[in-house]
Image (tube, rainbow over all chains, first blue to last red; front, side, top):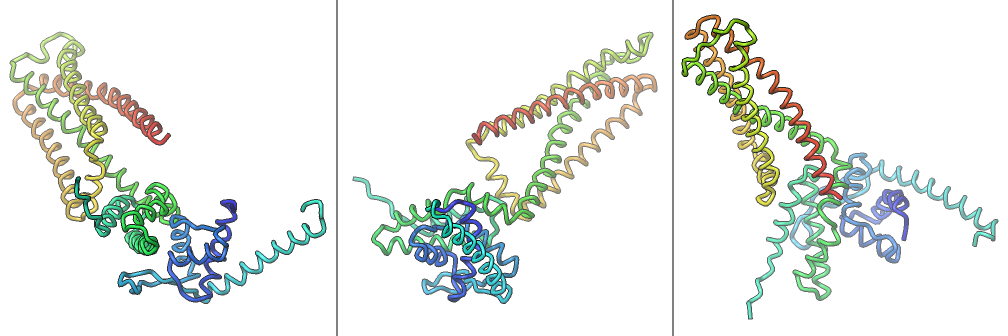
Length: 112
Length: 251
């Protein structure tokens, strides 16, 4: 439903935001975002894990292997200080776009 | 009625993982994480009433095919991918060098030995050109035949896809010991090939009169120049053939 570009652009802020709820792992992140978006944003593994890898390299998040309740190991991610700062920046940018667009759409009834 | 075979999740995971492990784009860490993800997904689906095998099939289908995954991971694992490509290039250069030089060394030695052994009097004609013509032609024919053998072997390797030599080669080359042995082997073969040529040259130098030796070496070198031209064209043609084959495969 969302364009590829939008999905790509929104991944980082979404991951950062979900991680403010607490640390999580890949599979759970996908489920949470699907739940939050009412099923409209469904990430694929091939898309998410490379992004998580990139975010780790950029030091926005950090991860380590931990034993899950199933007994197997899982990679848990959590926010870093730089990640929280990046989230603030992302939030400001998205709100700017959102406000500008809603202003336009509110003052131009022909668009609805 | 046949007894259905038990679905072994661990075996399926291993198979899936081994297949993906062949790609340089996916690090061991990425594979471990994807495996953990798949197991979680399978468990969730199975808890909703699906059999373990059904859950596995759906989970792997959702994760996506090998090529799609590789492409995505390759974008973030660029250094690993390029290193892998360089490795294959270096290996290819050395293997090709060997594949071409070994048969040719043998061909040259055979022709030289044959000429000297047959008692043909080299260098008896009046002009240098006439002297070199017959031996030169013999050398050329033998060298091109050797080249044809090398390239035929290469083409046969490409056509031999059924036995997946690439996957086998890949697996062997990822073990340090096998890689070391292969590298040492290549070096030894090249050194050996050079030694044979040097030995051969020394022998002719000792046994033949200067004029005869001159004719032998001149005709061999002359033939080699021509063979090299043929080789260049043949390799270019081979490259184009492989490229078209690859393009056809990817369409």
